[in-house]
Image 1 (cartoon, rainbow, N blue to C red):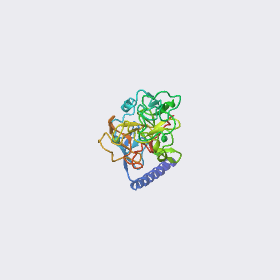
Image 2 (spheres, protein in one colour):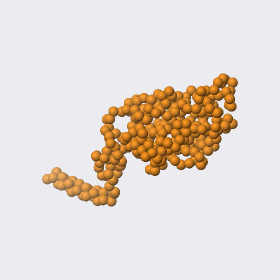
Image 3 (tube, rainbow, N blue to C red):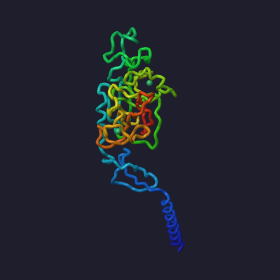
Image 4 (cartoon, helix red, strand yellow):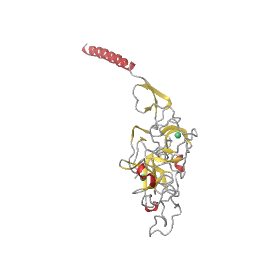
Length: 301
Ligand SMILES: [Zn+2]
Ligand SMILES: [Zn+2]
């Protein structure tokens, strides 16, 4: 008798509790969430559920055409555009590892030369040396590109996904350009915007720093107002020029970091990527990537 009564009490309590919670659901907006089995931030339109809160493993996007979690991991075809001489790029499990000597594969006044800023130990111009045009010997930063026996490594997911919250970029390398040199943000030092050093940038938006030759603005050596691949940001997402291959024009749906989801010349599947934002800085420059990271960054070391 006693057992039966507790069962009945429990049943009444349960019914009461369920009734309560369904009342509460009425006041919260239901959203449709789509399964993201491969964790790429894109959801499977065929597998969904409605809930107030985002369920684990589900996203609001529903544009994934292949959500298979155990799809074979391959190197993204965008890596074909990275300079073969300067880079070594390989898969390690589900990660991609990029190694570069940090040298750009194009001309610059920052290559060693006997003229201008020459020094006794340099007896001939580097083959890629060109005279400064937009900067001058007086304004150039110290150091030749070939002084840096750089070795930079970046490890990113082969299938990067957006983080639950964005994070700001810091000083030093925040990505790697396809040329072989590294990418910096819009700061030249702690709380020092690039304005103060802009006169030292060469024609392609780069200069030397303590440990590297690096880009701050649109690298016109290979991309000027177009949809070319610029490089990879430290969170694993690719950075493209000001235009998007999906439309042939400036994207109008970019988030605060210059990112959006669309197809590219390297992917028929829509995927998240960044663009150089088509907004003038100091009336004449386009900052490469001011941030924030929308994915989880790894250090460029
Ligand atoms: Zn700099
Ligand atoms: Zn795009």
